Image (tube, rainbow, N blue to C red; front, side, top):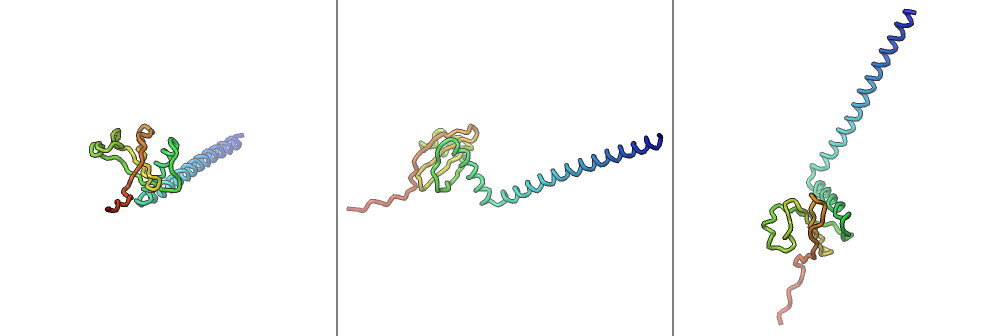
Length: 137
């Protein structure tokens, strides 16, 4: 009987040790996977062109939920840094620091978006100076 109790204690301790090792292995695998994902993201975002593409894509996705956007064109994204310098332009009257502007040159449309409130502030037509000067008569 004492031998059986001793054998059961050893089995119990071995089972606990096995569970602890399996737990550490599972946790290690989980964090190793998270580390690899974060390293891929760091590598992707360390390339300025990729980071800019990701930022434009994110803005297009968020703004596209609020308003229909022109298709077949990748917009230019700008961020308002100093709205006081833009106050003389009617489009930027209500602009705040951090607002984003999506500019569609082919569709001739500009959209002022406020990420902090997830709202469209202004939509306006754009003229980028592609018009030809009138011929003298």
